[in-house]
Length: 150
Image 1: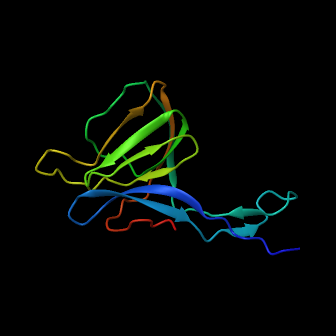
Image 2: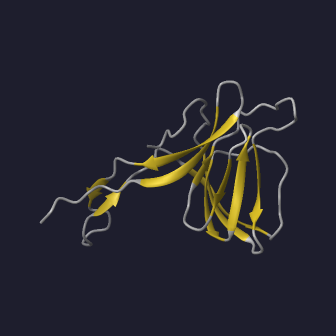
């Protein structure tokens, strides 16, 4: 039997640099372990994130909804369940995400720029609502740490 190849799964990271400017990087979960997760079921690829869950919320953003520039209230994983939404960071990067994609919002230490932008801008893309699953974590936000969950 051939040796199994560990998965590599993409996610987005909205992060803040030491100057208070937000950026988005496409990252990859790596370093999965093949292990017994739910015996007696066969082994599964497992990656445990070093983050302590604090709250789980489902948001429904109606078609056409666009927020103001803001910071995430807590470091949080955001996973679209249906529809499409976008996130624009202060550096001008705009990312659109649909069902099954993931983003870690860690812009709590953003500082206003001369145009009054702080954190990120987000909104719905298309004619249907975007349903988002948020998992807020109690871990403190960090700066200058793009892709820190690889």
